[in-house]
Image (cartoon, rainbow, N blue to C red):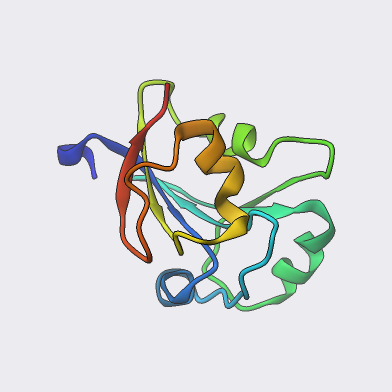
Length: 120
């Protein structure tokens, strides 16, 4: 990741999330996934889904939740250096990543492919 300038990879609720973390989740309109950095795995979940995610099989990692009146994109941004690059692994038409797309732009996002979008 460092050689490509990627600070973190966000795994959306697709097969990659299950493959790399063991967490199985169906896509929805709310942001839920795993943020992977060089030294940390953090699950990003809606507040009302936190207990359900905690009860499901998954690799150990922090679980951070966001509430309906909070920005899920701001939660993700707070975990990455301001000049970092975020790689998204998700479906391009996924409504759940709309907050991330709105904050960093839709360019470079493609179906289930890791693409980098700079944080700025």
